[in-house]
Length: 276
Image (cartoon, rainbow, N blue to C red; front, side, top):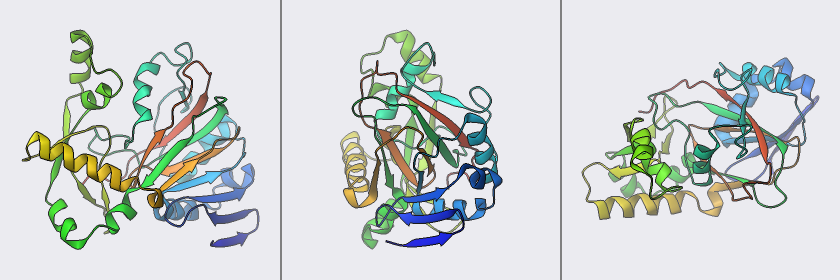
């Protein structure tokens, strides 16, 4: 594995195709000294993990701001990811996180990256998996790349919620449908020139295909992109912090007891590039 040593800052790969670990202290991260290097690593490796770094909320926000513009969400830029409705009244919507997805497929410009830290863990389950959609695209046969680059996919908040609640009331369905739909390329050509697959549980159907053909293609590509060689599974410890490049990965949480009290704190980097 590649290892690079610097004062208070070391990098090592977690798997061959996705994920790197950085060892550094909180002061070094918050200073922004290695911000450019972390961003570059994030775009190449998709996921960057910091084991038991134990940043405070204030330090996490300060660190996030060294990497780009922070999204104003939650309290003081920290959003609580938990199934405890006393801590997060919208916890029901978070159940969609148990399925492979890209954050922001209902937006023109999705968020660039998310920073997640662990504050309370479930005794069992609750790992987070990430797959590298750049690497998955790159490994496709050239003949399939030519076919896929022409396709558009309609994304829908309703479709993602039906994974969790397949028989909503009409009132709930109306709330979902207020989010509308968003038509995106199946293959995202980034300004860097690299290409990635745009998939996930919000993908409703492929434009111009029959329902059967569309379902088959989206299911097959999801299975393909989430093969072990493209996936990194993070086994959380208290105080861990993980960043992922939302524009080049999908992610999901693995099941855990919803009454376990699991608590994660998230900060988000604003999007910098529209789907194209």
